[in-house]
Length: 164
Image (cartoon, rainbow, N blue to C red; front, side, top):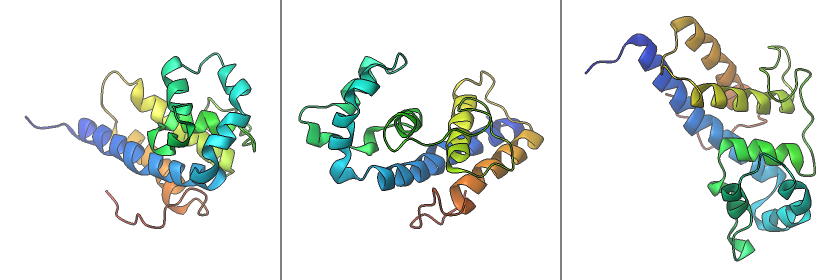
C-alpha cells in the first residue's frame, strides 16, 4: 500500500504535532508549574478546575491521583496542558482572536502560540479524511515549526534538535 502525497503530509504533520509540539508545550508547562510543586499548584486550583464543565472525570483522575505526589505532566495531553495554563495561576493571556481560533500570523505572544498548538491539535483530531494538501501542509508546518523551534525559545526544548 502506498500513501498519497496528501496522506503523507497529514502523517508528517500529525507526528510534528504529537511528538514535538506536545513535548515543547510540556517543557513550557513544567517551567510554569515545576514538577516538584505541581501537586500543590493543582490543589490550589482544585475548585476552579473541578468547576470547569469540559473537564472530564478521567482528566480529574489524572490531575488528582492518589497519592497526589504521583501527578506528572507526562500524563497530560496537549488539550489538558493548555487548559491548565489557561485556568491555573498564573493565567496565560488569550490572544486577540481568543483561545479557540487560529491566531493572527503576526501574534507571537505565548497565548497565541498556545492557541496555535491547540488549534492544530484539534484540527488533526477532528479531521475525517487524514489528508493535507501541499499548500495547507506548508502553511501548517511553518506555523507550528515556528512555535516549536524558533518561537523566541518560549516552548523550545533545547535537548531536541532532530527534525522530521
